[in-house]
Image (tube, rainbow, N blue to C red; front, side):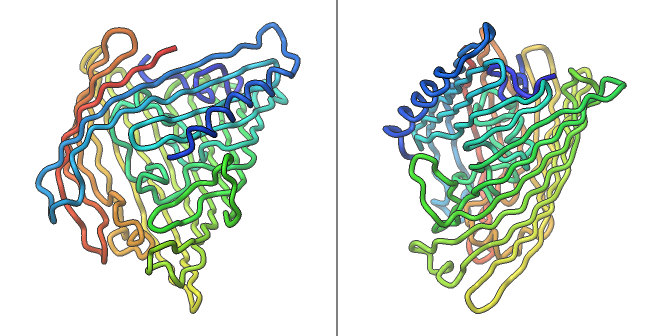
Length: 382
């Protein structure tokens, strides 16, 4: 089975069923024009997928107050795909009330039916959730993402995007099971002020370090949605202090991650979980500091009917409360206990409600607590 087909987002079927707008859209259009110059077979096709969403967040019981504000958020994720006999172009552009960014732009070549070699900016294969659900909110059951799987510019602690080379290949076994592998190497993010900033193809700057990522997975059947596997990454994160005095003498962060994930399906139950070990070596001008911690989440989903899903999630960890590295990310979600319900209706539309008890990492290792009430509309339009 080919690794990538059409707009099913790098081979993954659809679940259930900030800055540079002026330069991003022309770049994506230019990519389409470049690829149209290649000869293609009769099966070559262009496809678009729109993933709009609108969210309302109400925050209460702040301790201390004014940490997080209630807010309304809206956006649309635009995914473009061209598929030819051996070539493919994939672009993803996110426009929202918070940001405007080209998330992915990757050109792929398929040397065999079961392999794909990409070049460009793509999602790190070292994250199961990101590889499975991407940016479109309709594709995931929950409104929020696990803290382990957050994007770089949304309090994430590990790289979500890499710019370089990405190889995917599958191996079918005799019992129709499938082994899948994804390997990536390229430029990762820098640490600027108080967040990770991914390499921008449209505004290239020097100073980005090397990121290596790996994912190995096993599916019990060729067309089975169930899978489990292993993820790992090595990231050299160069630091730009900006206006953050805590980074004045910090030169680089070397980060190693290794973990496991599982996505199991039964008749009415689904279980998504991942556990990842992190080792960070903070290289200061006058020495180094190392820390280790484990982050994990467990998200069960129960299908009440074809249209309603009851779900919940626990974001937990060990050692993260006293991590020197995470202390540099004061808005990182250190703990979250969440429950919710999703209603799928009409033609690929959904309404989702979540309630969560949440803790941010805070400054000086002091957690900041609050409760979240979220309501979201999302859709998929082809």
